[in-house]
Image (cartoon, rainbow, N blue to C red; front, side, top):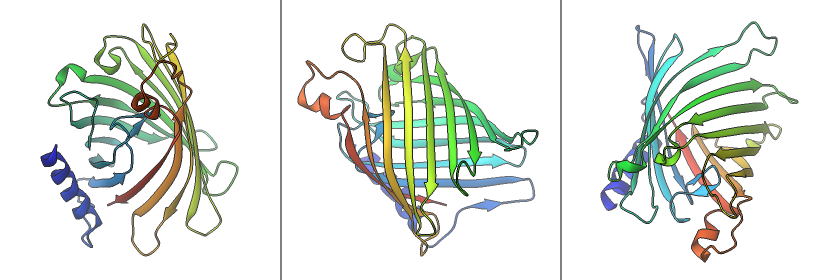
Amino acid sequence: MKFVLQTLSLAMFAATSSLSFAAENATGMSFSGTAALTSDYRYRGLTQTFNDPAVQAGFALSHDSGVYAGVWGSNVDFGGTAHLELDPYMGYTTSLDYFASKPILDVGFWYYAYPSESDLNWLEAYAKLGFSDVLFKDASLLTAINYSNDFLGGDTDAWYFNATYTAPIGSTGFSGVAGLGYTLADDFDFGGGEDSYIDWKAGVSYSFASVEGLSAELAAVGTDIDTDGMSHAAKRGVETGAVFTLTKAF
């Protein structure tokens, strides 16, 4: 665990330095990445770290054609031997110019991998549609549908539907963000015998004008999962809580 945190911390340090690693060459390939520190790694409203902080980093290689591939990682804690999540992914993005709003379509596959506990590994397909200037100038709406036939490594079908709206607050550098998601999984009990649950997020973010790519977000994140019979720690992991995240894109 200590090694994982040290490795990801080095990635965060590299991303926040004055050097820029984004590059593009004559082949049409470009490299980008993000690094983040968060007070609680919440995945679809559920904590992945027992409400403890996480250090995260991701890197992507993209081509002008729209094809891309990358990897994203974070420390995790499920109470077992898994302490690192390292997710490779690949996809394709394009602008649907034949629509007046010219939305951005993004489709691909994401593989959730836990090197020390491979039984938890699972693959998910996703399709996202992003809209710009929704209701207000520079405001955006991102909708997504995800599907897996091996949800959480449990050999069961699951769907996830999500919509996230982000709107700038004038020229202050602040933006409001709100998201709503719905998970439905066959033969799965999320509490109270329910095979589905709703998650939400509402908060505010700030982009630092003095440091390119640096942003901070404070949001309330939670779910409607029935916590009756759960331990105090389990309840905290699904109930609404404040999450602070500092992110550097490069």
